[in-house]
Each structure stands twice: as structure tokens, then as C-alpha cells.
Length: 285
Image 1 (cartoon, rainbow, N blue to C red):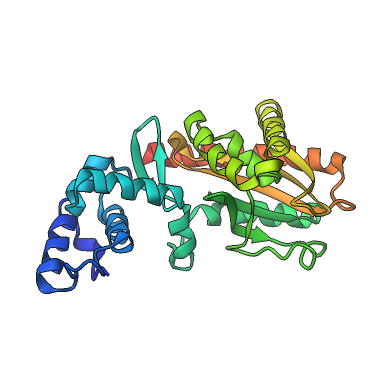
Image 2 (cartoon, one colour):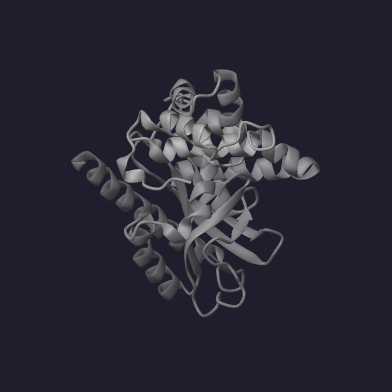
């Protein structure tokens, strides 16, 4: 859709849309100018912007759409995980669903590159499946994974695999680190998805939040309606811009409660180290 992003500055998306309309690349008929076409134009505004964060007015000006229309599109894209909204900033940025679509085209150096050596170490030392995961709507998506011999066949999870947000240590660790407003917004969707099971899941999530607050990690036994035990710690990027989860899982017979606690302490320590490292890089930049 975009020939060269390198020559775009903050003011060009609107002009590009106008040029494309004039040239016929974007049709004025209703079959083209629908929610999908407009949504993609909104996402282009973020990819072309020099700033990571944009508010609704910024986006409306860049894409040359009415503010009410832009607001509806932003809410829809947020609901699908393509945009993340920061209540404190009152601004949006690209979300993890965009990452899942273009993960193979990511830059050579990424958060995953920093995390992977730790995951490999955990998988080898404790014979578990170790992963870095992020939220994608009401699920967690695996961004980096390392298998052990015990988990290669029993946990068939690879990069891009999804696991439930509610009912897993991975999901509960991430939820524990979310801002209150974002968590409340998320609970609305989880409540609707799980319905009669929500009360039990909410209690489990609350327990996970307490564990993260006290220990820096949370555990789950027989999660995801399987015999899989898990343990996870949140990883929060500088300024709270993004929240991830570092997690380990294995069949219950291999991942005992004592082992969960030991790994949990390691995960919390690794998360702190990475947060300090990333914070230092952000300060230097």
C-alpha cells in the first residue's frame, strides 16, 4: 500500500490519501470506502508517523476523516488488538495484533532477541517450555518460545500460537501489570466470553494479581483444562508502553509446586533485569 515509508513525515498521510483518491487508487464508491478500507488507512497513519503515540485528533487530521468516524474506527481497532490505548496518555499506538500479522518481517534486533537467551537457559535447566507472550484481544500470543525434551511433544506451542488469557499463569501475570482502566475494559470482554465460568476465573485472576504483587510472579495448576502447570512474571516496558509475560510450563508431573516457586523467582529476577536494561536504553536514547 505504501511504496516507501522512509520519506513520509507526520504530515504526509493525509496528502497521500488525497493523491490516491485523485488517481483512482482509492475509489469513492461505497464498495471500497468501507470500514475495512478506512481501518487500514488509520493503521497506515501510525506506521507513517514519526511519533509512536497519536490521539484521536491527530489521526483524524492525518487520514482526512471526520472525527466521529475516526473515533469509531479507533475503538474498533482497539477492540481487535490492532491498537493499544493508554488511559494516562489518552493516546493510541499500534498493538500486538499488528505484530502477529507482520512478525516474520520484524527488525533483526527486537525484544525477543534480548529475551531468548534467558528462555533457552530456563528450558534447558528446568526441562520446561519457556516463552515470551503478549496479549492479542482475549488471548495470549507466543512471541518467542524455547522447548525442552519434555515439552516438545506435550506442549505444541510455537511462535504465533495462542493460549487463553483467563485461566493461565501467562495471562494472569500480564493482567496483573495492566493499568486499572485497561484491565476493567478487558474484563468486559472476558466476562462475555466465559459467562458462567467467569466468577471462578475472576477469582483466579485476583489471586494471580496478589501473587505478582507479593512475589513478582504467579502460578497456575492444571490450567487451560489440561494437566499443564505454569508459572509466569510480567515484563513491563519503560513508561508502561507495553506489557508482556515471561512464562514457563510443563506437564504437572514435571513441574511441581516447589519447582514452580523456584522458576517463578527466576522469572521475576529476569523481568527486573530486562526492565532495567530496557530502561537504560530508553534513557540513553
